[in-house]
Image (tube, rainbow, N blue to C red; front, top):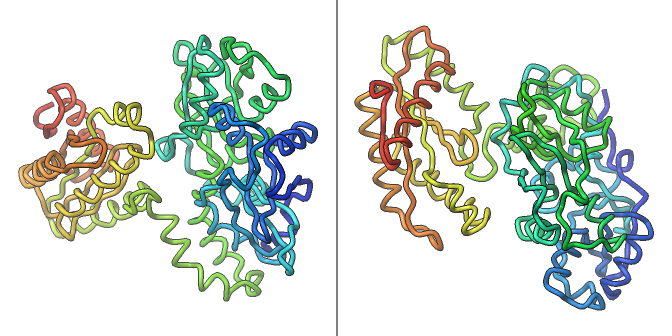
Length: 444
């Protein structure tokens, strides 16, 4: 097996424009070529203009004759076309969804999107045994709307919250979707933005079941040429959206296995891999926002700690922590502030825990903590310390927030899911009891 070069996967059918040109000229070219993105050349550097930038400028009622250099466009990272695709992986968490491929002299060769990376990952090498339902809490790439919402308001929401898609739901089921590709059509046709969004939704929504594997999701994206998978439960109710970016991040740990299985074929990039192994390991086992372990690494640590507990006839407990009324924070202050709240509470949890305790971001605004050598009473005392320290925390813009905690004790013969389920039921009771409190499995 040989990993492809950047030149092999780069898209060459791109449009570009000098930064001294106007937004009006850029929009004209994008509409003519039916492109959602345009590369802006800025004295040897490259910036990206996309349809979301145009929506924002229209919302601000800015004259389309504004120069591109006055728009503060995001710079795109560059990578030489002769490099290996592995070199592109480090840019996956970049704010843009693209990388510019350049020649040795720095001139533009092509552009790489996340879809180009996905298209060159063999699904057979991915985590065939993992299901989408295990990853639904990784991201927040979903915004639901009503079919009666005014189109202009929907576009404003997309621009302000940086959503590249919105989904209309009825009876919890997705009935229509609007993506940036649809927005380009609206702009091109000069459609009436005062009409309900129902006039412009793409329908029906193609979905994939949450029980599908990562392999199924990648094949779905490659066949449909989509940038995301819309995930539903067995009854067709909307469960969430998983982006290409998240699916790519799930492949990192599998790369390590590939490297071992194809050692002879990978000799040509061994030096590169040695330098990047630690970086890949961190990306595969930690949450990119908080730096805490992710649920996959937590599961691995739980299993090893459980074995030690059994061998030593010790005790061990688990706590599930949820930020109270977190949706209100996002709705009132925006997702950027919401992310800061999650990070500060994660740091507060870490400062309160012992060195032996293990904490992960379980998903969204939830954290899961494993407390070795602690029984239910001891873990509850620690949980209350975390709750108190969080309540005393003063967060810029938001002020104070609270948490609710559910605590369970690990029993011999239990699976991790059993223990988490009891903690989740205790957490639900804490929420029902008024929030900002700790409940245990004995309270259920």
